[in-house]
Length: 336
Image (cartoon, helix red, strand yellow):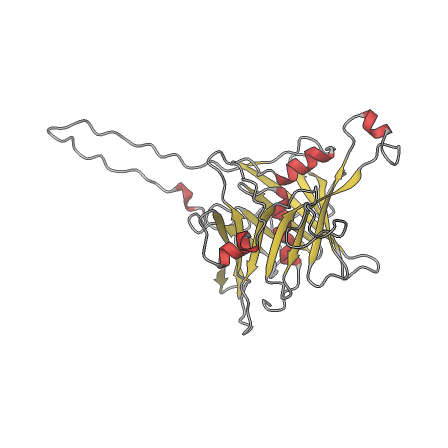
């Protein structure tokens, strides 16, 4: 992983919509009742703004990198990221996407994950990888290159259906619905089943109505301790997509993109990204839960032709957020 200064810092935050959180909630005090207990005052505290995440180390061994990519970000912390799209050379149809974590204090960014679409695949198939470093000098000297350099390790995959309306996010592992190429049919593989991390559903727009995309993000619900339980379905009926489309949402966390508002002055749909997004794009979105539209779990948007910002917080993990952003890049035959 490398640390560098971003080529194009986003514009400084501008004044957005007026925040309604600072309402005056003073209530008039009623006279004491002649009999009965003395009334008590309930003190309601509003949540404090999240603190920006600071990466402890930019050089992680493989097991630490995998744990970081899969672990939900602690509540009260926001991760600021940039994603660059590289369309150089002969592979313009298969660009590479690099995800950097920003350090707002030092104005630097650190490369954490990369993704590229697989060629010769019937549907969109992204492989997400990261750069792992040796933990000790002994490991470095025993590395294949003998120079202690970083090596690429696969973290997960993102796959879509043919129309590009449904996307599934997986960890690295065995596909339970087909035999591995190196495993004889009928014999179990030693590789564990892949973990299903999320699903993204884009509403079709067959009639071509003007307006932003509509998307749904389906995650597994969290435990009371704030952890994400492992979810490794072995049957099609157990998958996130099957449960969601079948109406079984008991253990699911269903999120939607926040509906933008029409602006008469600009004649466009707008969202308040607090200065983190500076260019209009159909790819721009904010993810929220219907019960709390002010808690922005994730937002993504364009700041230059091939430069985007991505910010996320609890309950998402870095791999989930990056995968959801990748789904927005992909062409959608039935949604445009």
